[in-house]
Image (cartoon, rainbow, N blue to C red; front, side):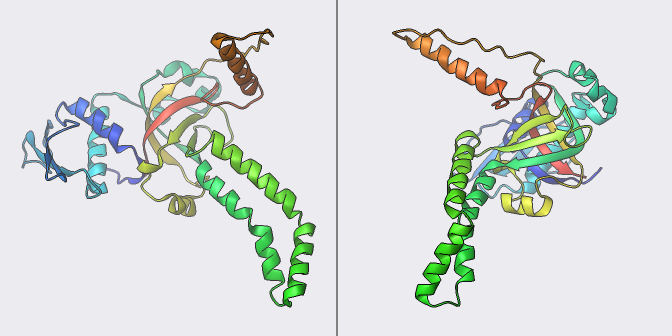
Length: 301
């Protein structure tokens, strides 16, 4: 068995699916001292953590921070192995080649809600972290001016800083950064976007999903430090297909102007504005030729 170095694991969804597959790990149970839960389950083939060789047993899980990642990883291994046994996990690298992706054959061979596994190049866009960086960059001109004028007297220091800030266009800089930061905060707050490129980076189609920061196996700073936004390696992603958009044109019909508007008229105007934004490239959901995916696990082998 290949060892997995987990980068991301949506343990809540994985635990839910595992309970359904094995018909034995309840998602709720009686609490013991508010800390421990005695979770009983049935696992055909036996599970070492339960009883020796038994098919039934109590699995003691601590549902606070004391629930170890190793136990979560073990539950995931059970989940993936069971999907393989039931032939419910489609391994895309084995089913399709590069030409299949380019020709659109893959789209016809996939179904929504299907479990898939793929090893490919990825890109990660952590918009919240990017916003934090932008806010730090906003202070850069003032910091540079301060460091440059440190050796000067107090009066000359103030004058030097003013000259440098003007030379660097600090006022315009600040305005630009504020605008970018506001846009990110409004449109992408808290979003970590994952792009999976089956036939190479910057190619279409690609799989698109969102990551929940609570399920990252590293803190965000460590993740970006170790791998960057575009890891120079292929990762294995297991997930569930969420949507396979069709190719269609967005038609924009201008709403009719009136002297009075009811609620439906207002909704039509809002829909009109949204369609304009979509037609100009600003999209809020997965669109053709991308394929939407709900990531369950990301790991290296």
